[in-house]
Figure 1 (cartoon, rainbow, N blue to C red):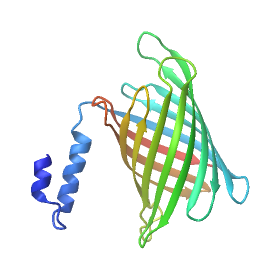
Figure 2 (cartoon, rainbow, N blue to C red):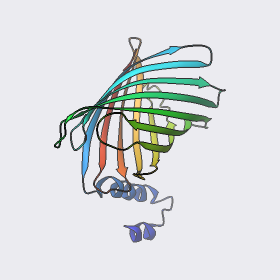
Figure 3 (cartoon, rainbow, N blue to C red):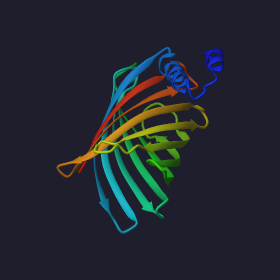
Figure 4 (tube, one colour):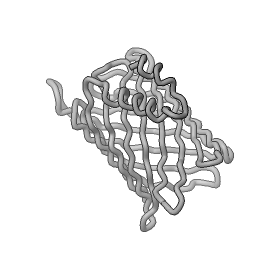
Length: 224
């Protein structure tokens, strides 16, 4: 694959061919890929001119090796200025383990701190989010995990179209004892209908340290 990309040299004429080859290698050159579906219900309220609070519940259904999960989340955000937001997210998990010898409903908790930069471009808008998080296993098996992540998104405005797409890429790296590395590529869209914000999205996650764990994730959400 590398010598093929080198041969093409990625000039303007064949840049789309190079991109297609990279995507094909990324998405289909894997050994095991599972599919998951996430459904989120939430509400966003304004606490002050700068602060907002989003509360939500999300059900994650795993159709492969993953267990189903229910997440409850509180997300506090502060608008520092037009270019920066900071946030604190508190999350509680219930993991419905129905696989293996030890089964049951197990609990986890996570706290995340983030800062997000917003950049106006000649066409569209870019967002870069930096975040660190700590996950704790409350009951059941698994490891406590510290993870750093960086996400880039691009909002593409389309004339006379309300469901403008957002394209994103995110890199996640966790510390001891797992040292996981993963990469996400995705696209999402959303719009208000009857006073409710509907959103739909998809991302592919490749585990960069374990070739057996990759996932297609379908997302949908309603915010009241």
